[in-house]
Length: 260
Length: 258
Image (tube, rainbow over all chains, first blue to last red; front, top):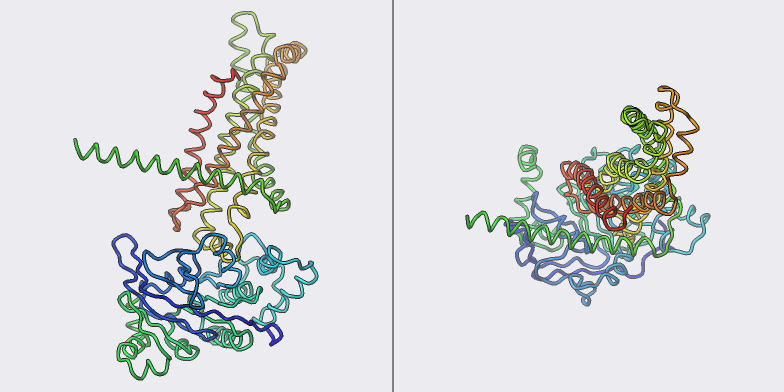
C-alpha cells in the first residue's frame, strides 16, 4: 500500500447518547464518544460490554434504539436510508472477527469481489490491484486457495486485504488479534499501523488484547457498564484509575481466563 | 382459559407476522431475480448443485416408484382382465401426480435443506454481513441465483422422474411379468394428452420449484446465528416445503383440473 494510493478523506465518527437494549439486557446506556479522523482508535472493554455492537452500529448493520451517530459532524448513520447506507459502506472496509470470507470462492475471488461489483476495471487491472493488496498484507501464493485452507492469521490477512481493496476512508476491525499466536498478533499489529500510516484511513479496532491496545492505540475508548471512557491512550492510562485497573486486570492471565 | 386464549392469540399474530415477512421477502427476492446484474456463472453453479447433484436420487427413485406402480397396477388390472392398460395407469399417475410431487419432496429433502443450511451457515459466519459491507445485496448475490436454479431444475427433474418411472413400470409390467410391450406403450400414448396431463405436470413442477426455493432461502436468511439455527433452518425447510407441496398439489388439481 503506497502513498500514491493514500485516502484523501478519512472519516470522523461521533456517537452521542447511544442506547441499545437486547431483550432485557442493557448494552449501551447514553454512550457518548468520538473516533478522531485518521487515527487508530481501539474500543476496549470486558466481554459483553458492547464493543462489537458499537462497531456494527457504525457499519449500519444494526441501529441504536436511541441516539445519534454522526459522520464528519453531519449525517446521522442511524437515520440513513438504504441507498445512503450503501453509499456510506463504499467508503468503509470491515475486517470481521472470523474473516467472513465467502467459503465457496477462492481467496483471490473474495478479494476481487468488491472491484468486480463496483468498478469498471478489466480482469488484468483487477489482478494487479488484488496482488498489490496481497503484497501489502503479506500474503502470497493464495490465489487459488479456498478460505478453509488458510490458517487463522492468513484468514485475517485475507479479510484485511478485502477490506482494503477499495481504499476505504474508514476501516473497522472486529477483534483482529483474537485466536492468534503472539508472533502473528505482532505481525497484524504492524500491518494495521502500516496501513494507517500509508493509507491514512480512520481505524476502529475492537480488542480484548491489552498489550496490543497499548502498542497501537492512538485513541482509546473503554466501554464500562454501558458508557464510554475515552481519550488519548497514554493520558487515560496515566490519569484514569478505571482504565488503569481494567488493563491491570486484563493483563492478569487468571482474571482474563475467568472473564472469558 | 384466558391464558390459553392469550397464548393462542399471540401465536396467531406471530404466524401472521411471519407470513407477512415471508411475502415481503418473496417480493424482494423476485425483484432481485429479474434485475441486473445477471449472475450467469453463479446460476450455472447453483443449477449444478440443486439439479445435477439431485439426478441420481431422482432417477433411482423414479425407477423404483414406476416399478411398484407396474407391479401393483398389473396385479390389480389382471383381476379385471385389463392388464393391457398398464401403460396408461402408470403414465397418468406419474405425469399428473407422482412425478412432480415426489420429485418436489425429494429435492426439498436434498437440495432445499442444503440450500437453507448453506445460507444459514453464511449468516452464522457473517458472510452475508461481509457482502453487505461491500455494498453487495446478499439477496441478489446469494439468494436469487439459488432460487432461480431451483425453479429451473424442479420441472426438469420432475420430467426425468416421470420418464424413469414409466421405464420402471415397463421393466416390471413387460419384462418381468410378461405383459405386452406394444400395449403398454400404445395405451400410454393414447391416454396422455399434452395440453392437460404433460402441461399440468410441468406446471406443478414449476409451482413446487418456486415454493421450495422461497421456503429454503427464507429459512436460510432468517436463521438464528447459531449451529442450532443452521439445523433448524434445514429441518424446517424440509417439513414446510413438503407440506406446502402436498397442500398446493391439491389446490392446483382442484382449481385447474390438472
